[in-house]
Length: 239
Image (tube, rainbow, N blue to C red):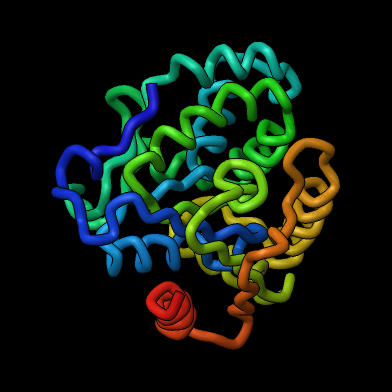
């Protein structure tokens, strides 16, 4: 079961039914940008990366190897995953819950990030989650992921591909990990892991990371979050 509390807690906006997708590599800023754009458009966020991360976390805890596509697909189809929008979350951020446990931070560790990349490359898992992702976007959404514009919502109203240099993305991810505390890998280790993940995500046979032909590319390397959000919203308003 996968559902979003934002759909239950907020009335339909004037953009009801609008689908905006933001694809791109890890560390490009998709999550932050998607949340800000969704807030401006009064639409729920569809964080597909969080879904795959939660599958990886659930598999790890249940002893299901990240190479076991059928086992993970079965787990994905039954896990009690709930998204709680920032507008109704006491923390002021979009929360991810697995049953009665909030796993918002647990799914963002380097270990689970690596697992999410591996899990998302498995055809049975992608097939198990495809319909769920589309159902979550039925009423409109701002989605962020790797293949939303090419596979999940090929007819989306607006498509964006958010990118940044590998160095900038690694620095952002490293700062994010430092802010959470704990055992933090070095910047060089984060950069190496990011290069490995980029190669894996772009080279996989099923739904590889790729910019849709009709997606607008936005490079966030030298831009602020405000500037990126403004560019996306301007494009949505103009088209």
